[in-house]
Amino acid sequence: MRESNMIVARALAEVAKEIREGVTTLYLDSVAEEYIRDCGAYPSFLGYEGFPNSICVSVNDQVVHGIPSDYVLKEGDIVSVDCGALKNGFHGDSCYTFPVGEISDEARRLLEVTKVSLYKGIEKAFEGSRLGDLGNAIQSCCESFGYSVVREMVGHGIGRSMHEEPKVRNYGRRGFGEILKNGMVIAIEPMVNLGSRNIRVESDGWTVRTVDGSLSAHYEHTVVVRKGKADILSSFEFIDQVLGKNIS
Ligand code: MG
Ligand code: MG
Image (cartoon, rainbow, N blue to C red; front, side, top):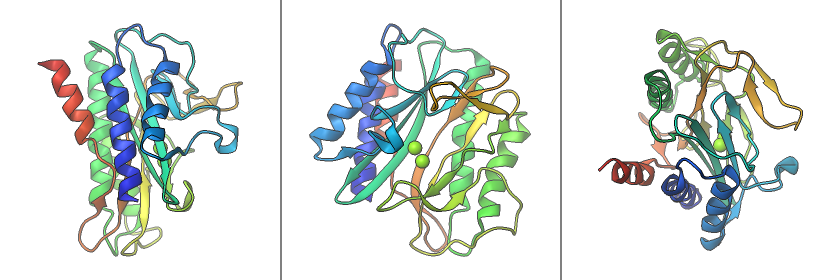
């Protein structure tokens, strides 16, 4: 599973290299698919319940499950890229929300807080912790900044199937919910809105948007529950290297 997740991590970095004004989201899909196939892996999302592409690309008020298209990225957009890969019978799953060029302070803060909330959740993914503790850590972080957490879409167990039990909610009550066991592998993925938490599904049957049109961000890691501390199988390290280079 670490191998599958490293492929995802590097595929997201390949996509990161190409994210700029003037690029279509369908082009980003082709970059990810080519990288995953070059690794001898299969894009987990391609054909999943009929999904037509290899990554989900969700721009601005799109929350998740955006279908790559001829939409051309423009400066100021935020674009979440969710990616999965299947290798040796096991899936990896990770997501990162990228800025396109200069973005507003409001958008930048949403991205920062959503990423921080992911790590707050991961801090609670240890043996003996409860899923309510994990969800509560994410929720309280986001709500302390005035953001809202999407309820309908959740993280999940992952392994030989992309989506397994348990459901990993991004909200919850401390001391409640399933107790995490050593060796469980879960995908933790806060979806966080600048405005209200309410969402709707577009007529394409996939794309999820905020009802109020506010921006939404999404970060995801696949982690193994361990004693004392989770082991993060996916990584943003390669993305950080790419984004660092763009700044200098
Ligand atoms: Mg994902
Ligand atoms: Mg996932």
